[in-house]
Length: 90
Image (cartoon, rainbow, N blue to C red; front, side, top):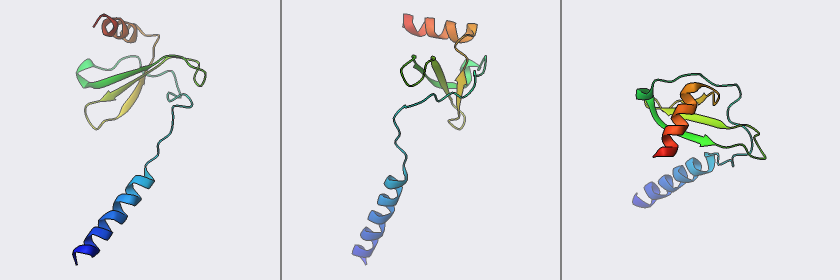
């Protein structure tokens, strides 16, 4: 009985790992200009991606605390520029 449980667990783990998509950052993640403002209290983390050969513009992706939703910030807004400037000082 134990061996059947171990085999079932191994199969489920294999299916879960195989189903995960691991894709390199090969294109732009933000499809539009992005939002102008997100209240700082709602932001869990921010990732800044500089321009590269695969995406010609800077991308700022904010992960929100509630639900882990990701939103793109417009890097041209005053909020985003101030946020980047503050992060560089730290």
